[in-house]
Image (cartoon, rainbow, N blue to C red):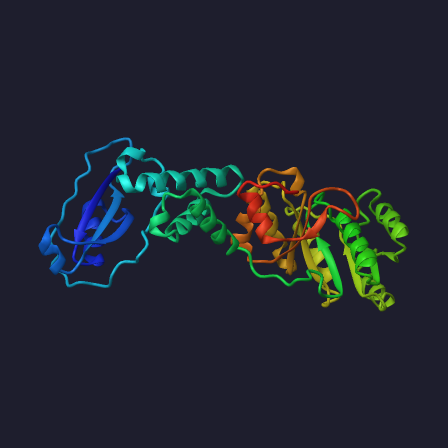
Length: 366
């Protein structure tokens, strides 16, 4: 890969030279405005200097030349004040091939990309986030690692849509998701919080008659909390149960875990929940799920139109970055997160700031 520097009267003219010399796949590394050398330069308009990379891939190297072609096109709009970065394009380049002023910023950027990937963030997303973060760092702080980290944190937070202060702001919520993600335990935690701490009249319904002892587990929790519990066997049982629990402020419905590969079972669940339009579906996902599988689960459960996400088992993973991958795609609020098995503890309202801090290197109970 070759790195070239071009000077022209305008940005379009410089970019045209880049494409002509390095090809259409060339990547702009930096854009800045410069003056012509000497005293005469102070009396002439500033020119545009573009640093670009392209051509043969590394390890073939050539001496970096710095041609200054004369531009025949009229001056265009001024380039952006901040540099335009392409971290991914320099991933294979040794530091010594970069201009001196870019070596430290690119080293910091590549380090951040590597850390994000280690924590489960997809490479493409990690590069995109770091590039945007680096482009927003003031030029006099490009070599400041703390400035890059803070800018990166702001870019990551942009992936999270705003969510209401109270996640369960409706009346009836069905908890859906794959097997083994902790729906039943999470419902028990939320039932305890809303009945004991928030003093709401809570009722529990369960449709999970497939898993051995699932009903018994919820019955035990309901007895301890002194809450009504109803078991639903058919779709017709749901409207009747909701009517019987008409005095409840909050109704939590546990559903059987469904594999994302079982299209028929997912269709049955959609039909079951469709009997009552007032139900809001909460998609429960485990933070320990592999990134590809997590996105596949989200895709398969989309026809059930979940209104929010809930992540469990944050205490069991070091790859919280998979949540970031899903945020970039789902654009859906996260209501609650859990980080343990204790009932009614180990559950809290999701904080995008804390999730981002975990991706950047924090711990679930920091």
